[in-house]
Each structure stands twice: as structure tokens, then as C-alpha cells.
Amino acid sequence: MRILSITPSRIGLFGGGTDVEPYCSLYGGLVINMAINIYYRFEMFSDDDLHDSTAKNQVPYGAKQDFVYTILDQWKLDSMHHTYFKSEYDGLIESGLGASATAAVGIVAAINKRLTINLSKQEIAEKAWDIEVNQMGLYGGRQDQYAATFGGFNAITFGKQIEVTQFDRKFIDKLIPSFCLFYIGENRQSATIQENFRRISYDQIEALNQLKDIAFRTVKPIGEGEIDKIGALLNEAWEFKKLSNKGVSNPK
Image (cartoon, rainbow, N blue to C red):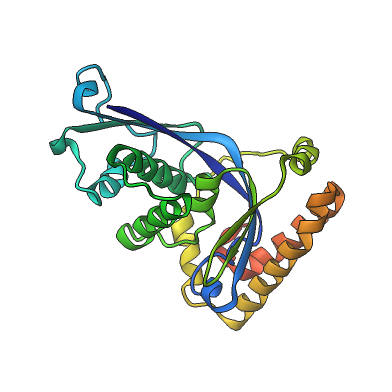
């Protein structure tokens, strides 16, 4: 058996940080993000396809095989049980695109197919998040896993329940020509940065409240294709983002 899963990276536009515990459970969160065509590809080989495959547990540059092993082990799948894998990533590890979540979702999705577990999209996202945070200790929010699972351009609310609302493609096509993505030449570890949200101060709560409010105010301009307003709101949100977590920026 050969299974191939392909999952997208994401750009977080508004509300990042409001999807992280404990804030999202206490106050509710809202994130607006978009999946992009920088993909993680995970191939799983088993049974007869093992003999035709040259895959010998390959991972992208900068990634660790233990990441994959930890996820496979949740279902007792490893090389001792006649499973090999090959994975590739279009982007760079630790470049701020949610690569680890993209990979975790892709691996869980492949396992879901192989074992016919019939997990829903939300269950795949939740399982990937749970393994990363509670098994690997990679503390963080859920927006990356949901973006990788659902794709598209989304407004995602976080609280007692999580709801994904996708913007219609006709609204997004108006905005895409105005977006640019740059690599600034540095890597960063998201889990280390997110640790600053474990215990949130009053000032952090106020900044996160503002980020959530800005996310709400962005929905209408997105629907109307008002790129100038969206740009102004991005600038406003970035100032509160830096107040919510000092680790997100540096002098450079």
C-alpha cells in the first residue's frame, strides 16, 4: 500500500495568540488565516509497496525523524511493523509558516487513511495538535493544524467549541494580487515563543483582546475587497501583537 498526503502551510493574518490556551478557553479567540501553496508531502509505504519503494524514512532538511516516529507510535506503527515513509517540504523549517503542524496533520491524515479510522477533519486537526503539545511538548495554539486540515481562507473561532468559517473564493481572489511573502533569512522556534502565553498578564490579556477585536473588524473589509483597510488593520494588529508577546519580534 502507498498513501500520499499533501497538506498546506499557512499565513496567519489576524488574531494570532487568541487561539492559545489559556486565553482561548477563558475569553474566546478568533483567528483569520489563509492556507498557501507551500506544501508538506508525506508518503507512507507498507505491504507489497515496500518492495517497490526506495523510501527509507526520509524527512525534509532540518527536520527530525523522531517527529514522525512519535506520531506513528500513537498507532503502534513503525519500521518494525513494516512501514516506511518519505516526506518533503516546499518551504523551510522554522520559517513561521506552521511547518510542524502542517507535517503532523499530513502524517495523521495518512494514518487515518491506512487504518481506515474515519476521523473527521476536526478530529485530525485536534489529534495532530494533541500529539504536538501533549506528547512532544511543542506548546502552541490550534490555528496551524486547522488551516492545514481545512485549507482555504478561514475565520476560526476558538472557545468551548471550534468553528471554521471559510471565505468564498471570489472575495479572496480580489486580495491575492496585493499579498507578498518574504523570507528574511532567519529561523524561529514557535513553541519557544508561545511559551510566553502559558501565564498571561493583565497587559497581555488586553493586547489579545485588541487583536481579537481587530480580527472581527477585518471580516467586512475582506468581504468587500478593501485592501487599504486590511493593510491598515494589519499594521494596527502588529503593534498589539508585539505587546501580547515580546518574543514575536526583535530589533532586526
